Length: 360
Image (cartoon, rainbow, N blue to C red; front, side, top):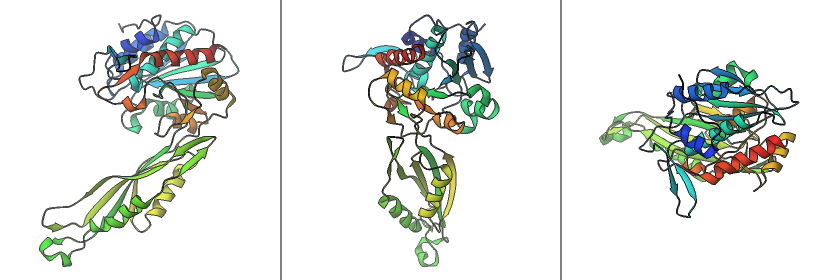
């Protein structure tokens, strides 16, 4: 029998409980079983399982529906389980351990509210999905978007990615490209016979060094772009002129630019070179102009929404026509960190913000 989670406990205690169920990507089954069994016992929810993704929905006939999602997998462990309560240098209480930030604290808040809110002011779809930390082709939310898009239908979506308990709208797009040069091999003692492909990367690097990334205002939020070399390969042996070299380029582009426009920009910058796009994900506009989003911002209060510079799965909702924001406990700087830790007051702050909004 799958273990049952105590959803009457605090969201802090639920965070610890689900973090201590190891669920490195590809090993989510035990936690998915526990989430499914715990939610299936609640009469106000319809529960659907797809692989190791669990979708639980209220069916109250409300005029509007909100989707609140979080991934249940983590990056590999490094001696950082089981979790521990600790005191930070500033005296605040933290929960330390793998998954506390990315992003089981957000999932714990979802579980707590899924249990407690039997009569929210909107219908709610709670999504707990697998394989976020690995290949895009395996991503559980992406799988649902392709095969069961009706399960993700809604008027507004919230992704519990760590955001320091602040609202972060949309996200930048992400492109990775390989910019290649070619030459001719020869013995390095007779280099004039060859054609050095590594030397030919100099103009590529000069273009990157001189590039001035944009800051683009999208729906009131300022997104900073970035274009950088993140790798370079080339060379055969210590006495051979290389005939191939490659600069690996990463472009983070504002959501005002489509994926196709981002590709066109990179090809224009490196015109004349062999440019191969190896990864591409469109960004997402903030979605803060939606009426539900404005009500959400007002209910949460606190600092004004800020942009999300990294790419997140809010872009999957945006592609489905559902405006989405990031809102979760934990500072992004601690995501994947061996010293992963979340201030416990951020867990309760996110719970309180969502509870106010869903019950107002």
